[in-house]
Length: 166
Image (cartoon, rainbow, N blue to C red; front, side):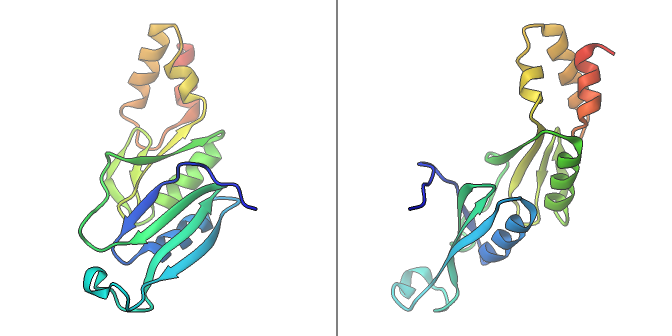
């Protein structure tokens, strides 16, 4: 029997749920589509979708469960919600930044944040950033903050140098 997290994100799309899920599962390790549900004629007066078209795609990204819903144009994504990716290496940051940022909104890139081509906001951050930003030395935190603010894609080495005072 599969064990799932008690809380899982549901992402609302306007017809691109399966395309987005396939892209995301191609980028993250240990990822897969787990189910695709299609609209039927039942409830068509409400959903107004063609019977047989994709309604819901369930998928996992590196073991985290997600749902993608083709709910229509009523709601869109905003930066108020983002998905964080904690990366151990610069190679990981580069990988996710390149793959998720491809055809995304370059104007929505700052401090490790990017918006993908579907409008979903992601934060691609070094796992070490939490340690740096919660350090008890306010000067270290200020130096890291000052170094990070002008960055688009985060640079682990530059952040570590700022943390060290170099």
